[in-house]
Length: 159
Image 1 (cartoon, rainbow, N blue to C red):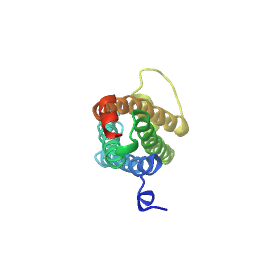
Image 2 (image 1 turned 120 degrees about the vertical axis):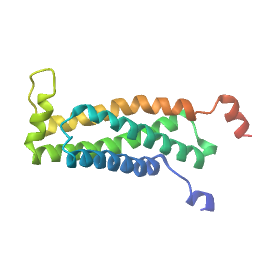
Image 3 (image 1 turned 180 degrees about the horizontal axis):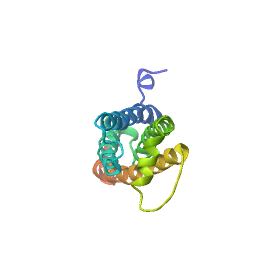
Image 4 (image 1 turned 90 degrees about the vertical axis):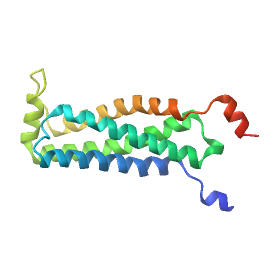
């Protein structure tokens, strides 16, 4: 095995590392809002978009910098998706556990909805997962527009 093989960065490594960072940022922000008594204000969840954008962008930037020889647009999208899957899964499990331990949280969330619907911790966790994945998918595309290389640059790097 050559020395370069030992240092090869994979999509999964970056995805897990930055996915854990994303989950930590979302959980930390939620706990801070909880300490301040603001966890029931559903509009504050849009601040998570800032975390998603920043963490995905930094993860893609790191991957691009360390894998310049095999960086492609679709590999970048793959990195973004793994980051989102890890981060969204951990954060949704946390929200599900929090809402199971604190039923008043679910009641407050349901009270903020325009429809008269009821749901439990599992449904809330799935909604958080889907919301993170959908917004994250869109933000990953936005990040890739900034980080993509043109075909001309790719052909120059390959020779």
